Image 1 (cartoon, rainbow, N blue to C red):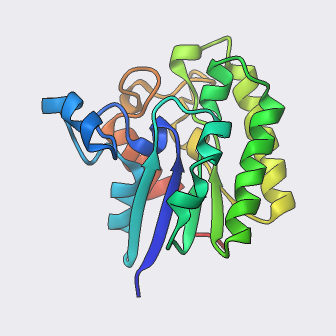
Image 2: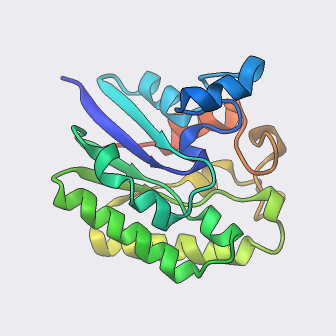
Image 3: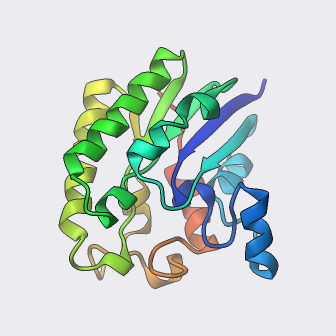
Length: 196
């Protein structure tokens, strides 16, 4: 039996910079296009019986992501919620981003879905000034996940460079903002897990 997994988020969900679920954006990517530049591609190969729907949109904040939840989740069994880095990049309050993520978790559960939430990746392009807000948001996500009884996908620590806290390993980031294909492989194979 196939479980349908709706993945809702920003460019990390979309698969930037080498993939996007929107065919018009894929046409602009052109020759560099690589469908393996999605953590979902790797997770589907690791976990039999899962069909992923990619609802990632580049550059969206959590409030914008939330407006697409019902459409993305229609017909799904599982909802993966991911977002927050664009809130930080645009100077929005971290607490508001965390509450938006909580609201999406609750909305997904109200729709009868199993829900998991991903934490925020390290951001080399925003280092060092955005390390503290990312850490704060990830702490709030962890607290929210405990309170809401949902699993956190450890995206941050899966790509964290142990030699440079606050940064992704160079081999796992394409542009300082997004993972490489190898980074997405690690997220899909090591960080993704189904809800408890």
